[in-house]
Image 1 (spheres, rainbow, N blue to C red):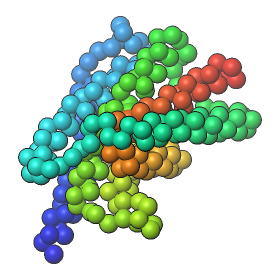
Image 2 (image 1 turned 135 degrees about the horizontal axis):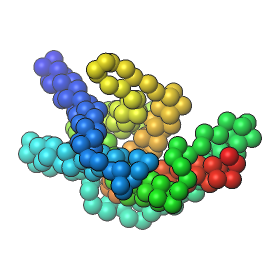
Image 3 (image 1 turned 45 degrees about the horizontal axis):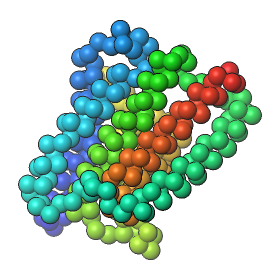
Image 4 (image 1 turned 90 degrees about the horizontal axis):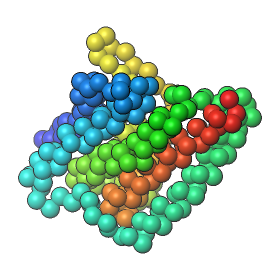
Length: 241
């Protein structure tokens, strides 16, 4: 019983870190003024936020390594051949999915335009963030750190051994990280579609992480999916709005 309680407490602590440190990172990003570099606020705040959350998480990797000497966060290249296969197939399938979905959205006159003015600064800055920082920062946290710790706590697999509990838990917390909330006063907002989208992609990134034995390829998948989504949104905004 005490062993199970210990696992639950560690899980709750890690969950609080996964959801709390990004909020702290937001406070850090708030400390800077970006008006001269990024007058529309399209890329600098979120870039500093993601850099800060990655840096803040680094000490916790050492903490885990201190207690579990053989903890493997899979920061190397792993299975390179399988990794590149994941990247190439995912990129193709995700591009097809995105084009089909945007086609449906455009035909139904429900297109949500790019949230910033379509200027060179905003486009290059925002796409640069998505390409270089979104995947590396978030996958370091939700796959390399979270799945490694969760796999030590929960070894069970589900659906005829196809899905690990660690992947499922990390994907659920990744989904919850896309809920906007604050404590003073307590408010929250979310899009159900966005949550399901995040959960699905989180599970895919987790499978990639487990099979390739590397966080590098989920980082690439994450960045690719974001760049494709944002890129198509920008093009649709230019040509259809």
